Image 1 (cartoon, rainbow over the protein chains, first blue to last red):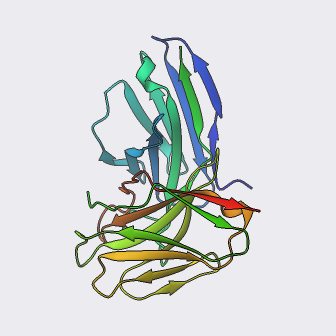
Image 2: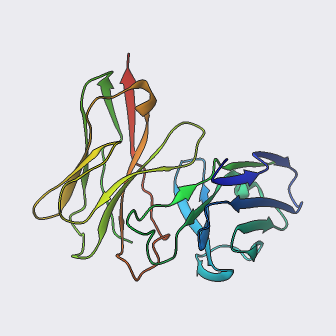
Length: 117
Length: 113
């Protein structure tokens, strides 16, 4: 069983379209995150939800809207896609926002590669 | 965000030990030192973390300098599967938002057969 799973793994779309990436974790964790890895391989946090409540919102355009229907799911919806949105988006989860028990560990999904043409 | 400095790349031969350095001269007294790695086409994977004392787990060892301004991740016997980008990250302690981890460029480790 995959701990943190994202769909789709690859997404190719045109500028101006709206798309969503879904994430699910089966670890029973309280907190989920979205990270973005750009073409230069920098990995930056975008959002974090704890028990369906938004707790981290870095400086991200409001075209990006995360939604957490329950604590096991965190979806990312992107409106009016731009070329600069092309990146790999990683979902992650942790036990809670204070620390992951004794390990302090984030569990990442395999990523969703978004290409905007 | 606290800053770390790592070499861009390092190389090792299979089955040899690898010492990956990280400088964090501006570390605060309560920052934890985390190491993650990212294999090609995969998400980052937790390796180890520590505060002051050296730490060992099944994947690696973490040696932390006495002044905490630097640390070294030690892979005792490198395998081809250890070829990855290794990230050294500082994070605030319990009671803060753990997930706000700032990943730098990391060190690309190449392992030769």
